[in-house]
Length: 138
Image 1 (cartoon, rainbow, N blue to C red):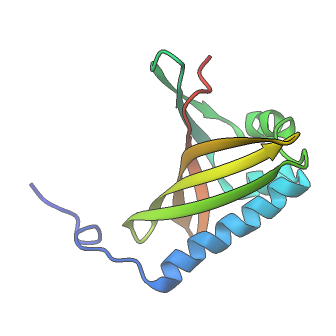
Image 2: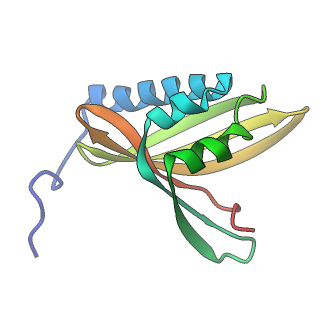
Protein backbone atom coordinates (compact mmCIF):
# COMPACT_ATOMS: atom_id res chain seq x y z
CA UNK A 1 0.00 0.00 0.00
CA UNK A 2 1.29 3.46 -0.88
CA UNK A 3 0.44 6.36 1.41
CA UNK A 4 0.48 9.84 -0.15
CA UNK A 5 3.37 11.82 1.38
CA UNK A 6 1.24 14.92 1.94
CA UNK A 7 -1.18 13.00 4.15
CA UNK A 8 1.16 10.85 6.24
CA UNK A 9 1.91 12.68 9.46
CA UNK A 10 0.31 16.03 8.54
CA UNK A 11 0.00 18.29 11.57
CA UNK A 12 -1.86 21.58 11.10
CA UNK A 13 -0.21 24.77 12.23
CA UNK A 14 -1.90 27.34 14.43
CA UNK A 15 -2.40 29.37 11.23
CA UNK A 16 -4.15 26.42 9.54
CA UNK A 17 -6.56 26.08 12.46
CA UNK A 18 -7.11 29.85 12.67
CA UNK A 19 -7.92 29.99 8.95
CA UNK A 20 -10.76 27.50 9.46
CA UNK A 21 -12.19 29.42 12.41
CA UNK A 22 -11.93 32.68 10.42
CA UNK A 23 -13.76 31.04 7.52
CA UNK A 24 -16.63 30.02 9.82
CA UNK A 25 -16.78 33.50 11.37
CA UNK A 26 -17.30 34.99 7.89
CA UNK A 27 -19.82 32.31 6.94
CA UNK A 28 -21.79 32.70 10.19
CA UNK A 29 -21.92 36.49 9.70
CA UNK A 30 -23.36 36.02 6.21
CA UNK A 31 -25.91 33.49 7.50
CA UNK A 32 -26.99 35.83 10.31
CA UNK A 33 -27.66 38.56 7.71
CA UNK A 34 -29.46 36.14 5.40
CA UNK A 35 -26.87 36.72 2.65
CA UNK A 36 -27.39 33.41 0.87
CA UNK A 37 -25.55 34.53 -2.27
CA UNK A 38 -22.50 35.38 -0.14
CA UNK A 39 -22.75 31.98 1.54
CA UNK A 40 -22.89 30.32 -1.88
CA UNK A 41 -19.72 32.18 -2.87
CA UNK A 42 -17.96 30.25 -0.10
CA UNK A 43 -18.98 26.82 -1.47
CA UNK A 44 -17.59 24.41 -4.05
CA UNK A 45 -20.40 23.16 -6.30
CA UNK A 46 -21.88 20.71 -6.81
CA UNK A 47 -22.37 20.61 -3.05
CA UNK A 48 -22.83 17.27 -1.30
CA UNK A 49 -25.36 16.84 1.51
CA UNK A 50 -25.45 13.68 3.61
CA UNK A 51 -28.14 12.87 6.16
CA UNK A 52 -30.34 10.12 7.55
CA UNK A 53 -33.91 9.69 8.71
CA UNK A 54 -35.42 8.66 12.05
CA UNK A 55 -35.03 4.97 11.14
CA UNK A 56 -31.30 5.48 10.57
CA UNK A 57 -31.40 5.13 6.79
CA UNK A 58 -28.78 7.36 5.22
CA UNK A 59 -28.97 9.31 2.01
CA UNK A 60 -26.83 11.69 -0.02
CA UNK A 61 -27.52 14.22 -2.72
CA UNK A 62 -25.83 16.94 -4.68
CA UNK A 63 -27.05 20.51 -5.07
CA UNK A 64 -26.24 23.14 -7.66
CA UNK A 65 -25.63 26.72 -6.60
CA UNK A 66 -29.17 27.62 -7.62
CA UNK A 67 -30.66 24.80 -5.51
CA UNK A 68 -28.51 25.76 -2.51
CA UNK A 69 -29.57 29.42 -2.72
CA UNK A 70 -33.25 28.49 -3.02
CA UNK A 71 -33.13 26.03 -0.09
CA UNK A 72 -31.06 28.22 2.24
CA UNK A 73 -33.14 31.34 1.61
CA UNK A 74 -35.84 29.92 3.86
CA UNK A 75 -33.45 28.76 6.58
CA UNK A 76 -31.04 31.60 7.41
CA UNK A 77 -31.39 35.13 8.67
CA UNK A 78 -34.36 34.49 10.93
CA UNK A 79 -32.76 36.07 13.99
CA UNK A 80 -32.12 32.78 15.79
CA UNK A 81 -29.21 32.96 18.22
CA UNK A 82 -26.63 30.22 17.62
CA UNK A 83 -23.60 29.36 19.73
CA UNK A 84 -21.07 26.96 18.24
CA UNK A 85 -17.96 25.08 19.22
CA UNK A 86 -16.10 23.83 16.17
CA UNK A 87 -13.39 21.20 16.11
CA UNK A 88 -11.37 20.92 12.88
CA UNK A 89 -9.94 17.52 11.95
CA UNK A 90 -7.36 18.05 9.21
CA UNK A 91 -7.05 15.24 6.72
CA UNK A 92 -4.32 17.11 4.85
CA UNK A 93 -3.23 20.70 4.20
CA UNK A 94 -6.16 21.19 1.83
CA UNK A 95 -8.91 19.06 3.42
CA UNK A 96 -10.48 19.54 6.83
CA UNK A 97 -13.58 17.97 8.34
CA UNK A 98 -15.10 20.22 10.99
CA UNK A 99 -17.43 18.92 13.67
CA UNK A 100 -19.75 21.57 15.10
CA UNK A 101 -21.55 21.29 18.43
CA UNK A 102 -24.13 24.06 18.53
CA UNK A 103 -27.09 25.36 20.44
CA UNK A 104 -29.75 27.42 18.72
CA UNK A 105 -32.40 29.38 20.53
CA UNK A 106 -35.63 29.89 18.61
CA UNK A 107 -38.65 31.48 20.28
CA UNK A 108 -37.19 30.78 23.73
CA UNK A 109 -36.57 27.08 23.03
CA UNK A 110 -32.99 25.79 22.95
CA UNK A 111 -32.08 23.12 20.37
CA UNK A 112 -28.81 21.17 20.36
CA UNK A 113 -27.20 20.34 17.02
CA UNK A 114 -24.20 18.33 15.90
CA UNK A 115 -23.10 18.46 12.28
CA UNK A 116 -20.02 18.25 10.11
CA UNK A 117 -18.66 20.13 7.13
CA UNK A 118 -15.90 19.14 4.74
CA UNK A 119 -13.90 22.18 3.68
CA UNK A 120 -11.62 22.07 0.64
CA UNK A 121 -8.81 24.56 0.11
CA UNK A 122 -8.66 25.86 -3.46
CA UNK A 123 -6.34 28.65 -4.59
CA UNK A 124 -5.50 29.40 -0.95
CA UNK A 125 -9.12 29.81 0.21
CA UNK A 126 -11.44 27.41 2.02
CA UNK A 127 -14.74 26.34 0.41
CA UNK A 128 -17.32 24.05 1.94
CA UNK A 129 -18.09 21.05 -0.22
CA UNK A 130 -19.97 18.53 1.91
CA UNK A 131 -22.48 19.08 4.71
CA UNK A 132 -23.35 16.19 7.03
CA UNK A 133 -26.17 16.30 9.57
CA UNK A 134 -28.59 13.66 10.76
CA UNK A 135 -32.35 13.92 10.69
CA UNK A 136 -33.08 15.72 7.43
CA UNK A 137 -34.04 12.59 5.47
CA UNK A 138 -37.74 12.51 6.30
